[in-house]
Image (cartoon, rainbow, N blue to C red):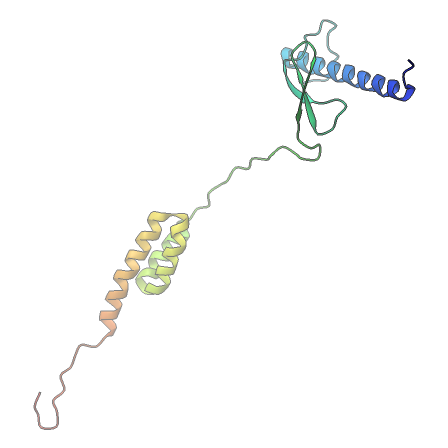
Length: 161
């Protein structure tokens, strides 16, 4: 029985890719073992790469398991080539001192605005937000009492109260 030449050529290409991948893994493993980050040629006595999942040399979007000596038949879905690894960004918390001071001053002078500032601060600095809201409520009672005239008893037409 004769073998299809096209299939044989595909198998040869796949084998060459696997050998190239193995060689690249060996070079990377020896570079990591020596601690060198430069692109020097690896010594002739190479250590095989550590066991683990590596990108499959012939199948895109899959991984193949290397047991430390040879490729196994275990295949798993891998990350698509276009997806980049996730980036981790440090979140720097902004200084909220100005907003806190403005909220407290506003709570004393204009209680409704101070209460709104306290609501905004609740999401950022809960302690300052609660304090601002409490001061706003207290100031609101004070300003209400200050601006509301005292009850004046006005005598009626006959002088009776």
